Image (cartoon, rainbow, N blue to C red):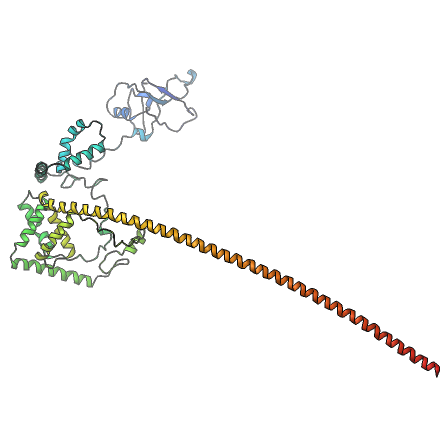
Length: 477
């Protein structure tokens, strides 16, 4: 069921109802792009099917259930016939989508498949028939388990098929001529799926573009110079085989030839040192042109790197992978072959030699990795048990410590309450004592006042008697 979009309603066509129709209405439809067609279903409401027919030849009416906007029919006096009129469709409906450029050339050689993918494609239908109730994810896990349990001889047959398919791909790719806009492998050079349009977070965004280019070792200079020649001489070699061949050729160089490459490496190092002496890094970069982490995070909005928790010294050592065991064996050999090799170059050579190994040669290192993984699981289980016991003991100790702290707090609280009660008692006793003292003082003052009044009365009587006696003496005289 599809819905059409009409232009802005006018005074004659306001709030039209939706009418469901299963009949084709003949009429002429004109869109914003001038597309005209006859016998278009639903009076001009174009869905993708009818739109494709409108750009081609006229087709028969298609009776599909859909909705169209039916304006009120005009009266006969107004020139109306009661038949729904054709209306403009929305540009998003009428405009066909632009054809997308394929991300890969259809005529490019089909990429080779790995041994597992060949096995998966060959056994998919058989596994589906044997397990009809399995989902897609369960079937994928089942296929992976069956491939992992396959005997080495049978697995080697699938590896041989994969090698043959790879040789087929390389042969076809050698004679492939890409059309304009595609690279040598048939991938689109521009577009959302091209490798150039995807910005990878590489070290190019972290290093100053004007910084001097780092110097190379003698082996890397030899490898870069002889790669194209060795590829022409051995067109069927894979990347790993070519790296192994290059290393073998470098080891078989005469001392005079090897001294030439050593001299080139020394010259390249002198060039790098001279350029670094005159190099002035821009703000936010160190002396070698690398972007400082703090400056990079502050300008790109990245969060600061969180500090890692200190590692437990009793924790088991992590399980090593098969490549790590390979490096333990190969690193002394490479160091003997290239005594002055750099750390970065060492990693490059080890990676190349690892990829050049056959599945049989890798098997011993994979077995070492499996044994080390078992060791790690056993030690990790024992460590987790010890950690659990320590956690339980720590929780018990914390609970006891918490109870002790609560008891101490209760004791302190009781002491504070007792001291407060004693202080209140002392204050009450002091208040009573002060009150008694005040009463005694008041009584003493009252007693002094009474004594003063008695003494004053006695003195007045004596004065009166003396005066009376004096008057009597004068009268007698």
